Length: 200
Ligand SMILES: O=C(O)CCC(=O)C(=O)O
Ligand SMILES: [Fe+2]
Image 1: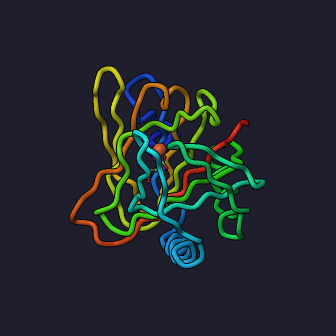
Image 2: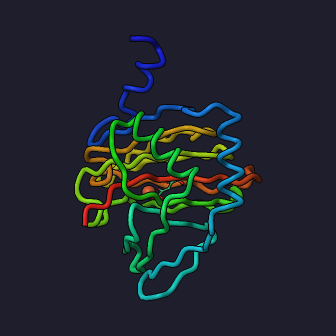
């Protein structure tokens, strides 16, 4: 087994879940191309959440895509999925090939700069089922991504590079939270695609 394979196959989490960081899986030029097309063509909208009964509009923008016009409920709001476009279908195929997993939906996040991030959470909605596989493709600015164990509080972080793939599976969502920290030092946008499998 070569060094690259060893890195890829290593579980990034010390216990209670499985995370594989594949590093960049797209060439820089192809990652640049996808980033620019997605920034331009996706109908980005500020996300809506209802937290403690209050309607919140996030700074981060999102878009949902899926196999059919699925409805998703999370953060107490319901959204309808758009149908895959050319670029997203291509990226889905690449990610499915590498992960060995099929996905039927994708949540896209746009962080305009380091002032936008995502708070601690786990992707443990009922519609994803238990031990779901989530494949997260990053394009654009490098950002710090962290995991925090729900009972021990142990934290572990990595940098998500341009064109890179991170896969979360097994008991990761049950036992760990994750976040994307804010930072003043990042001034460029980042687009993140999280491929998911909705079961209901
Ligand atoms: O932007 C990221 O890398 C994280 C996104 C995320 O955690 C989510 O969409 O659930
Ligand atoms: Fe998440």
